[in-house]
Length: 116
Image (tube, rainbow, N blue to C red; front, side, top):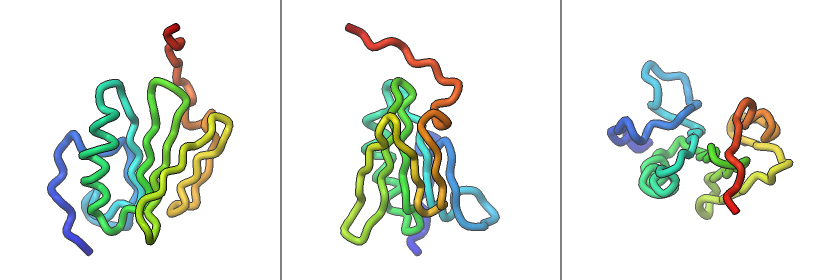
């Protein structure tokens, strides 16, 4: 396994699930990032590039805080596959055998009306 690169505070995900280890973040299987205005480019670019270097990472999940939107990047033999979860769809995280609807993901979230 590739040693985990040093983690800067701004690269920490909102949630991380991994193998049993004495320190959090040693070998994450899934990383969940909650996108905010102003961080989307970083979350998709440098932050995702950092996590892709981890052999253990199988999914990288981006949850948008401005609209009902979730994207799942899944590691495949040929590279990373992007799956946008439809608004009425189900978020699936294969490595965790986890499924839930977007209503549960965005529970108690109030979205701003779209600007005309």
